[in-house]
Length: 137
Image (cartoon, rainbow, N blue to C red; front, top):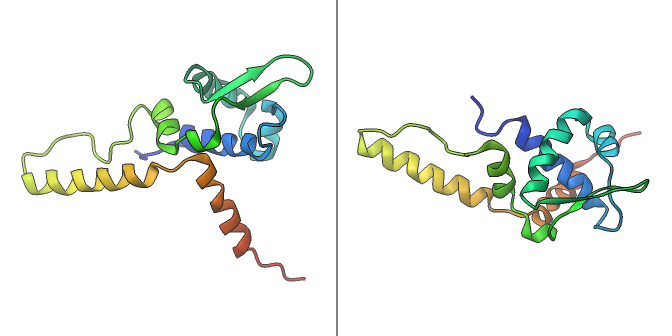
């Protein structure tokens, strides 16, 4: 079983789409779905949970949609994953062997530290990706 499922990756991808608008205008799930390839019905399920947790907020009307519920720098990848995945443990069971227990405990600490990045910092990966693009005509 994967540590992080499609729930987590889809939610992060959708939140990055909303963040592109810099909070200027709400983004409809239909638009997020078309840009990310994530089924709209699946996004609805994810956004219900994200809305309850205050990660996103919705607005009604013709120009309605979703905005980030908090500033992008206040939304951690780890928090989004925990809302949807319930846990992000490297391993589910405890070991009688203290060496393995210590080893997996250290991995868990490093993973949590690595996932303690906010949406604003995650956007830097878009810049990194764009730097690596190579256009040949």
